[in-house]
Image (cartoon, rainbow, N blue to C red; front, side, top):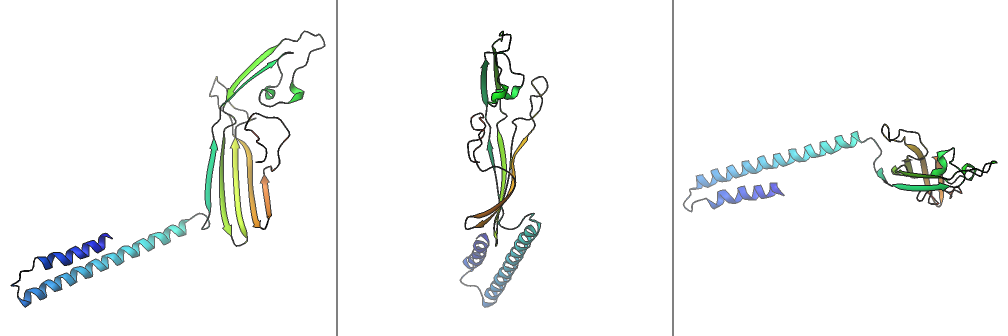
Length: 206
């Protein structure tokens, strides 16, 4: 440590400079000076240690959560390029461009004069962000998760800002009691959905 090196330097320097012919009074004075310097350095070290302990104690009192809580975050940015061609006319609902909803696919009208239509979309609405916490307790681990994406949400367009509102995917608290027991409260899913969707949107179990 720097303090120990400083003490060793102070001890060695005066002794190295002592002349062999120094009197007993000079030796006593130099030794007294060294003892005084060592005492001052010890007091300084004690003060620094006390200040460090006080700072750590103050930080612990300011912690907003229980000791041991772990935070996590993540997500990804994804660009989707989707082209759809409809042989019997343009859909009346743009939802079918992102999700395969059979009831929204145009069929041949009674007149039989349906016109083909093509739609191309590029967007990053399927990008996601999530935030998690994990807190161990005597009764088990308490975990939380909140996850957002931007699918199926209203927003601007290329004329203004081309922005999209965030959409809540997951928001829950999960109490893991151990031995295969857990209790989840909030919004989530744990089984694959049957609705066809763009790549990476559901991905089975979430």
